Length: 193
Length: 386
Image (cartoon, rainbow over all chains, first blue to last red; front, side, top):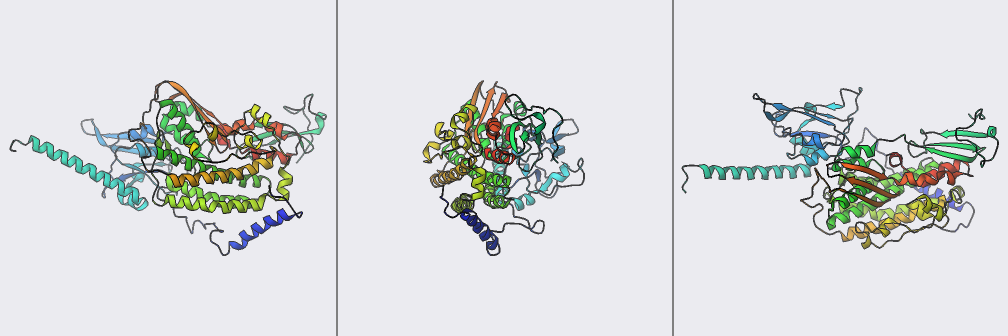
């Protein structure tokens, strides 16, 4: 490496670097990177993820919930943190609605596989990290009521992603509507052949 | 509190270790220690301050990673691989995904290959930066080099967070490509990080390279000869610091590494000083690779749309895939039996195998050198214990 000339010159050069950092921290914001949490908090990038949440459209968290309890996320979750009980209707058939949906955030790794495999865009990753509590058993199990958040919240934390999802769902709805109308026209006995 | 031994040490002096038993001191540099890079324990037998015997004890972070791998699907193992060498999660992802792609015969599109190279080299950059900080902390630099190093490393972690969602547990590679596309502005941010990195390396070199204290503490300490290193199965920077030219990126040319011209730095003495300096040189070479990759990045898909992510059932067979992780050769050996879970899932952890020569390296040196030698091997207990 570099040859040493004066004894102690290596240490002196090192001290010049630390002095430059110390003095520089008063003038150059890049040298002083401490964030005075909790008064200031670093803004998170859009993709940031901690634990999942359920999306509902509209105002009613029960009626607008996109989840149909298909149990795909429960099957794919690596640490098996998701527990779903699907609702049954009066005849005992599965209603497309979860009766209970719980995520154990002590088990959840935040790996986002549940979001990837959900066929209905019903579960998304939240970026809220304020999950600390005073006891260990009740609070870490997030229930359906705690998990359900409106689509407007999703737009607020992840605008780009939410816009894409909305566009995809709208296109899907239009496609289904067009197919339905075509079927209705084909079955309509009063239509001209 | 030092007291003389009043019993025969557990693995104590044999015919070839000098000194009567009453003069030797056995201490446990126990799992709770600020400098053992995780929960790692060394039972050291000392003659005064000189190390006479050393036995590493690990397993405090054993989390049944390989057994879990046998019971979850192939996709679900990917987030668990993040947690092996938790500093270089993207390299771990790539090693595992490479193995399963070999097993199932899945092709990877061009753009995804470039993205994988960019992220793997950025991982190497932030890993070596963290290594610098920790080694200097072990030597008693009380965190100033650590803080400078982490200040720069944070820039790279911010890049990872805006792309993958998480700073360290990235979970980004998939069988046949990468999980998602770059967000807007990521490439410009990456370009900025890569352009500012050499200034940081220059500053660190000015701080460290000529420093007399560093030289006195690291030169001639923990020497490993090239022949010993090969016999013990060492890989990675520790092997190259002993003068052996073996870099898996050049040997296997996995991914598209053959398209990037980069040099492989080699050490001359094989001591701690070489192991420290070789990482500076490796970081500069990594910067060259990321530079080229960012310029040449082609358009195209990052994942085959027909790629099977869920319910992947590779054909019956076995595959061993390895990458040049920042710590050494990280290999995955997967045996498939046509069900959705592997029959056997084995990780070749570079940190564990690099610890093979820890005793030989430390014997004859002082106890403080043992700490520096351990630091220079660059272990992560998540990988050693899995």
